[in-house]
Amino acid sequence: DAPPPRPLKTLDDDDDDERRPGAPPSSSSSSEQQPAEEEQRRDRAIAESIPTDREALFAMPVDWAAVEKKGIVRQKLRPWVAKKMTEYLGEEEPTLIDFVATQLEARAAPQKIVQDLALVLEDDAQVLVVKLWRVLHFHAAK
Image 1: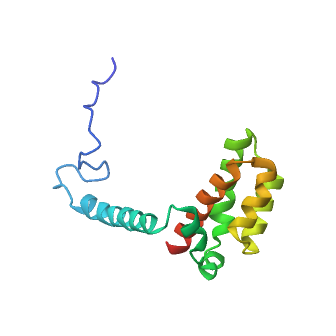
Image 2: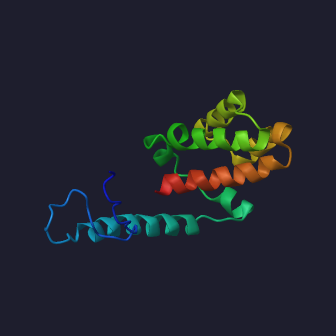
Image 3: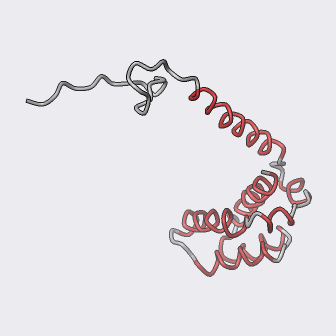
């Protein structure tokens, strides 16, 4: 015979499998959630501080020192660009991904990146670079 089914728990349950049987529920789960919620609020505030208007966004100075120090191009933007290239072109395009990463490492102006990518992505180049620039500013400020 199979053992009786265990009762289902909701995700909000405080029960912790690691807690000793009979031990009172700990308040650590709510204190662990606070930093995560705080980080989400901070991330949202950073995102909201970044302009969505193309002209204002491209005019906003980039904190290149933070970009280099945190390795943002390699760790965050390269995978993001790879994903976007797959969305736009239907396949990962290593040459274009390398090109964008090299442009970012060289601190190229966003208008130049749009102009160069327009040869391949046409109208999507501007949309891509606006999104890219927002992600760049977000991670530099984070």
